[in-house]
Each structure stands twice: as C-alpha cells, then as structure tokens.
Length: 269
Image 1 (cartoon, rainbow, N blue to C red):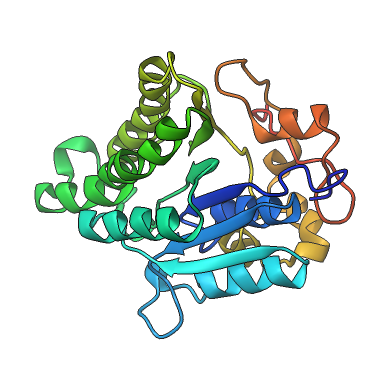
Image 2 (spheres, rainbow, N blue to C red):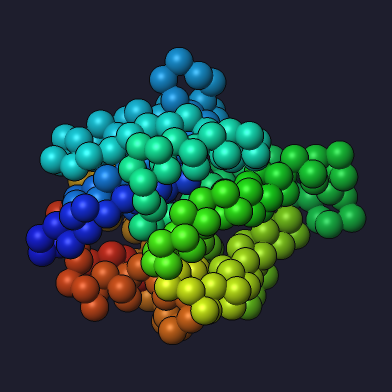
C-alpha cells in the first residue's frame, strides 16, 4: 500500500493477529504510514506455529522494517488473559500510549469441519473454538482499551468477514463473525462519550498467503487465479457503518503493491 506522507508519524499501533493474512497486511500498512507497530500472535521464532503454516510475527516485523518502518514482535496467546495483561503493561511502559488497536485474531480454520451441520458439531470442541475466535477479542479489548480511554483518543478496529446478513456456510463460523461485528457496534455505543472510536472493517477478498497457495499463484501473478474462480474479480457494495477497506482505499487514494486499488467483490451471477 502506498500513501502520501507518513500520516501516522508518532502514533503507536497494535495489531493483534499480525502473523499472516489481513493482520499482516494491516500491520505493514500502519508501519508504512509512520506508526510504531506492535505485532502480536502465537506464531513466533522458536515457538510452535499455528494453522500448520510457516508465517511468524517476526517475519511481519522484518517486512515493516525493510520498508523503513518501526515494529515490535511480541508473542502473545490472546486467549490467555495474563499474557494480554502483560502486553498492555509493556505498551504502557515502553510507549506510554496506544492510538490504534486492530483486532484481527483468528487462527481457527483447523477447528472447523465444514461438512458438519449444527446438530453434528462436536460439542467438546466448541469452547476452544469460541475462546480462540471471540473471547480472545474480548480479552484484548478489555485490557488495551483503557490506554485509549485514559487519553480520551484512539481507534479500535474489529476485522470481520463481510457486512451482509446472509449465512456464511457453517454455524460456528457464522456465529463468531456476526458476533465480532456486533462487538464493535456495542463498544462504539459504550465509547460514545469518549474520544475513542470503535468500528468493524471487512477487508473483502484477500490475497493472503493461504489463498495464493490454494490457487497455486504468487503475489505477482495472482490474477491467473481468476481463470480458476471468476468470483475473485467482482464487486460488492459497502455500507457506512461497516466500511470495506476497498472503499476506504479508493477514498484515501491508497493502492496495493503493484499500483492497483484494493480489490472489491461482487456475488457471481
């Protein structure tokens, strides 16, 4: 992403779930915009890596630094409150402030059996799934939002999957994704009398590491995947309350690597 000038110079940002996908991309963009970015997640050098993938928060930090930005990798399991408490204390002690919090925690794809309907779901696995995908967001907001409320300024973003009311294909996935949008809405209501803003943001189709790998393409030739799935080149409209990054990118004249505007989606006919 390219932007005019370091518009976030002097700001402190934290991306929870900066290991890969949307979290990594957002962390890189914040770094390019001049913010000091704390990159958190479970996959770090010397530790087991989630989702059987090779990406780490250390690699995300390296990408930001190679682009001339500043970033800090902090290994955190956001389902463990004591680790998030320590994270908040570290940000307070090191930076003395927090201006942007992006909640992009996920890492639960291996926990979903897409072929099972709600009456076939293994109940023994539900609690771990909800801890990873939803409760982790609650814990993170609970311990990091006070840094913003005390300063009476800041932005909290919940990364969600779509702003539509339709079903997302699996009962647990749909439940959590809808809940995250509602979480952002609820926080915005409770923050209304402060200088802190909370909102949800749906990135739309992502050229994530897993998506590129699935289609057998790389970043530089990702358009070749359109031949396999034409739905990847469409457009879907945005809404004011839950903005999509593609619309925001066009309004702020941002572009992705290679000069293209963020891709928008539309349902296939």
